[in-house]
Length: 273
Ligand SMILES: CC(C)(COP(=O)(O)OP(=O)(O)OC[C@H]1O[C@@H](n2cnc3c(N)ncnc32)[C@H](O)[C@@H]1OP(=O)(O)O)[C@@H](O)C(=O)NCCC(=O)NCCS
Image (tube, rainbow, N blue to C red; front, side, top):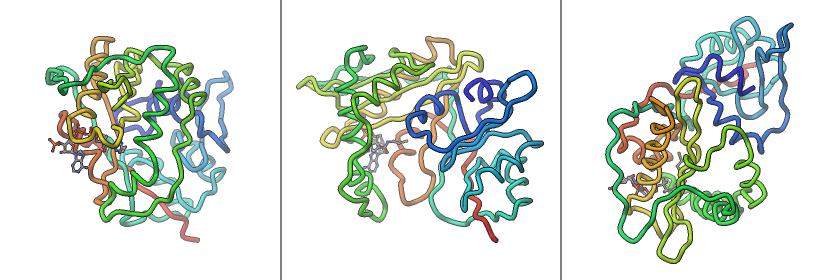
């Protein structure tokens, strides 16, 4: 699946190889379509995404059979196939902005006072997972929404084992997994970067700051540290996908502040019949 996504990647394609590495632990019902030579020609991940050339799009959509399917607006062969299959574009609701930045003119990294910015070490999956859970706690995400929403008292599913498995998944590289270390030694913010060496394209997924450390420039600093590391590793540009709708505005502000600009958005199609 990663090879297929890598073969055709542009900033206007829904999935980068990093998405597939990060999303592996959420993988539920999924299917592959292979060509005669065994190469993956198309795939579908229920509740997430599909990848298909025009000739297979209808079949992949039929296999998914979900009431709602999300694609990128720029994937016109997929939007056409969805309409052909009886889906209609939903107006309103959440969507993601695909944003890109050229890595040539990156600002210099300024480290917020009192913090250290560095790459994650191989034995730090536990601490890394704890920071992720704190940043992505549903109640906290709900509090950042406009208007605030009650997302319940649950926890993110990120455990030490899950974090270790991300760290063991190609193409994870510790130099792109940057953290801000607080004076007490805990991780206050993180930005996980992924590199597609063939396309010289980086991706940030995910980024977060632990409550209590926000609005100090930490998400910006760790993201920038990862972008600099991507550039040093050969990337010429990078992508990130913050929410684009008014209900969740904070994330995109961080990335716009670093020079990212929107190149596409997701669109959700709903089965009409
Ligand atoms: C979004 C998030 C990463 C921001 O972390 P942070 O360390 O506070 O971000 P920064 O201090 O670097 O903020 C950079 C800019 O983003 C904007 N911003 C960040 N948090 C904001 C908030 N709560 N309200 C309004 N603007 C905000 C501001 O423009 C800010 O610059 P300023 O403080 O100079 O005004 C953090 O709130 C978080 O972890 N949220 C939950 C997970 C998440 O949404 N991750 C990003 C998904 S793509």
